[in-house]
Length: 335
Image (tube, rainbow, N blue to C red):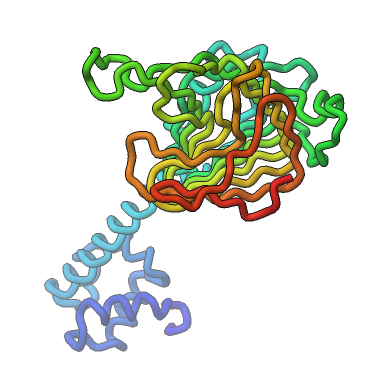
């Protein structure tokens, strides 16, 4: 008889009633009612236990406690079921074809970031057929603690060579950055930062990380020569502790900055086998990386690591600077 009755049933009743009921007597009562497992208590009524000699008050306590436990378990199960889809989407992968996208790339990326707020990593895979081209107009803000990966499909690591012909297969997919925009378009003459321009298309929030791989970034339309510049980076990494990796890419710059370290704290930039091509005329100058605050907290320290890489045209690495409030440090030898 004792073997047929699960110990969890007896333990549960004793936990509720304490020493108010004899254990052996309880076993006999449950045996007579066919209760072998805790779930079987759901088939038992107060009158059933009373008919077996259990006091009314004891019967009600046991069954009420069982009912409360069941409700709590259902509530927990329901919450888990609701959050399970979100837990399963910690990594969100999106494949994009330039021929099928009606909106600009920035709009598509930002919409997906907003749609999956619990995801930890987003992988956007862009079609890599020769001649594939996307436009990017809308600014994207990568949330804190999120990894955004933007890459060409079938992209593979390849050392950058002197012959630029290799870029046709190394980074065949092109992202064209559209014209710069006003930082505060509604500001009137005399107001702070009136008529100041920005040309960032992505901002990496503190503690976020961005990887861009196997792409050609065409920023030749971002011409700010002679205009008041609020903040210069196409990709902006904001302190503290945001980072970006740009690898196996080709970047066209007119007078822009590809990546800018911004706000207070440390930011990290990694350039791996990137060809920077300056397309502006004589007298213009573009930079792969700078550290510039704009209107933000002081104390920026941008650390840059470079592996491989080529410079062509009117582009050069900004000089290292240890002067405050902006510091730019190269962790490797500049190629």
